[in-house]
Image 1 (tube, one colour):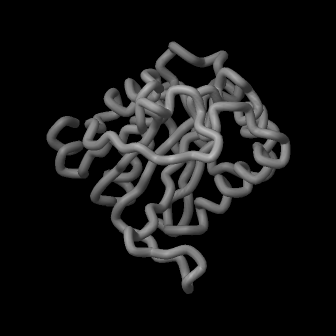
Image 2: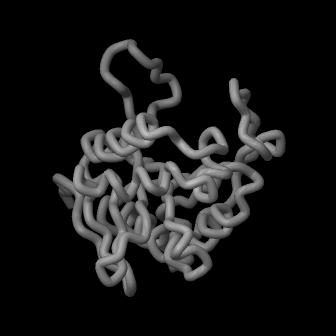
Length: 198
């Protein structure tokens, strides 16, 4: 199967459309919300400039490998959050040394959901669709996800999407967010594992 670009995806309650410039106000609102950002990145809300940079990065994720990218999720016309399937850099790829080298059969997914929709299953619904799309439509071999150990909500979404905890790791940060001392976790699922569980 050949996928040239991002498809619009649908679940029972979500319409997931490829992220575009007109969605910037939505992504910025999430990135500048203290509750949303408590266990993300620096553990603090992003500045306006940082939030604009994130939106640009999210849009550019669609240019890395065919079919990957970021989706804005809407329920009955209301913005719920965004979900991403991002390309994974090759382990031996070094920045600034020629073209970026990517692993073509593997993706990392992530998401941010508006607090208005927390606790209602939307994060998991969108995440499950990302995993399904990665394996069934794009025929990738592996999906991974990472979060802080203390981010129990994101960990529950990953587990509920079929990913299993495979690693806990510790990075050093110039401005460490609260809770980072407990480390970060990596989850993953392979296409074969997903097929067996589906």
